Length: 322
Image 1 (cartoon, rainbow, N blue to C red):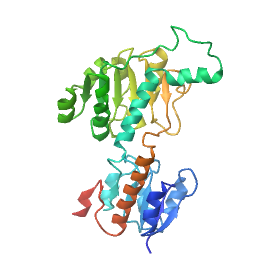
Image 2: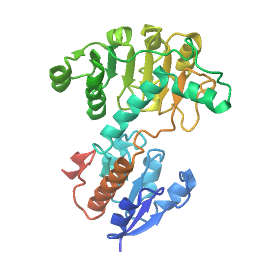
Image 3: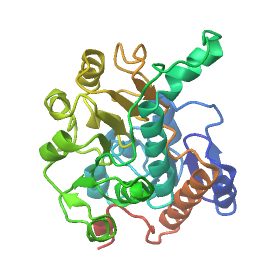
Image 4: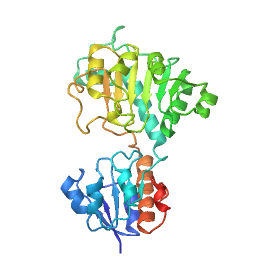
């Protein structure tokens, strides 16, 4: 029977499916594999189901002599050297579609939480320091009728933007391509990134991590935003220059931020944790029962196809199939 490595425990739905086809070697520890453990683990298996914090590069692929493919349990795949995998004719897959709404919902959760100062006021309540209602307490930002800026309108960015309909928000978006759905359903306008940053009251980032998007939101970009504006990031941490964001939040360059991803996970930039005008969640945008079960199932189905010599449904480098 073929063997596959699952680098960290995933929802049981995915593991059960894999076990009907393969012997499953599972990392039972609630942590990512160390580099040495990963290199050792891939040596004697036929496929690998990996996670976003597993760095799958040429060294790992060279050690994985028997492996027929890598199924990534994530939509993003910046943790995998796709060029090297393609050179070695190794299929790589991701899990698109199944976490779209969950991630869009998390972006809205962060938006409301930071605008209405929920974490800050929750802390006061829990501390017992609240002395009763007052007209100047915890005044935050309005949402209804404010301008929403969406940076990147793929599946998740589009779903996020469409959920603005109940709040009567003018929508601006920045993307390489026009989005007919947003323009038809919302009257959204496609604009240059700088124009979006200057006009939007809320800027939500939904781009993949690539060389062109690393530090897309840097000190210059933050300086273009309104002092009353908020930044939301549920994409990838390095898209935002985190040190620059700390300075912008501390100095009042922008009003606040909501973050689910970080530049050097699991660490945060120095000073970020001490700021009251940022809401921080630990990369949990896809953490709903339905989304995580479906991610596990999709990753498992991709790995089964790879190991059994079939075309993976969500293959990121289909050119390897000739």
